[in-house]
Image (cartoon, rainbow, N blue to C red; front, top):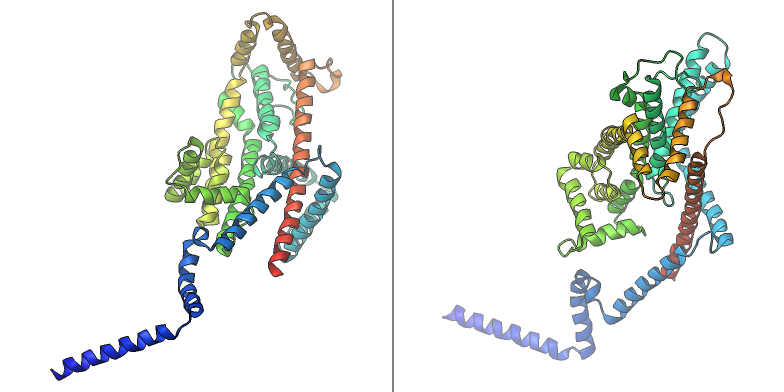
Length: 437
């Protein structure tokens, strides 16, 4: 009974002290205390639960970023040529400076490469029986670097991207295919191959050429091109990985779209978003074989796979190994087979015949194609000392001009892209200066 009374007295005293403390606090102090208590909840709640002033600042910041993005997109050679070229030169200098600093940090690698080049140069300049092997090695290395570079340009994301398969590798495979069926052999004389394809003096029996022989003839350049496309997929991976490790959000449209897609994954309704989510889930859950599956087929969403792997910290060799096998081996053989089958002799003849069947314009369209094929066959049987064959048709002239126009457009898009990157640097610098004020 005594302990029960003592407990009741203690509770009453504590209640009286609490009421006295609340009575002594002013309304301002209570508001401050309440604000301090609610602050963690507001921070956890995100921008939607912020005070009106902070929410308005966030909205105004988003509007400014959107306006700045639209201003950057206005930097085009055909709209603001002087400003675009000026920004392009400045961005080129900054990029060159960054690359120089990175090379200085990799001094051992740079020194090893320089020593290798010096040894090769010494062997190249010294006369001897080894010269033919050195020249053969030089030719193969330059051939591999050429196709590797074209593969990188096809997928690295500079400007609009250069479709080097359609412009270079595809026509090269088609030329080898047509020459193989015409000569019944793939043992083209070197030189002039690969600069020019001519039939060997001893041609094979008609119909003796096999599909595997043509595939083997173009395997080196095709695999090098595929390896270049795999290397070109690394920038999105490194960008997303660095952003995840540092905890910062880079001002990159693709990465921002990826994060927004992850936030709205449950409410996705349109087909493109569902396709992107399917790629993301496949890469995230299956891992190596998911990346391999995405890289082994023509997939315009593969950039998303690189961003996904970088965001979820997939190991580098898992990502790059699967990408290299998929693009340089599996996908490349699929594309080679498609081109070789399409440009085999009977398929080409059937296509030319179908062109002639077009109403009204068939005959006029069929004639230049036949002339072009006949001119190509004449070049294949042309020998080195026989003089040059007759002039080219207007179709080949048109194809050359299309290639030139596409390359020029790609160069212009690279200039525009680098100029916009420099404008982004200036805008980010302005934001950082405003934060420090």
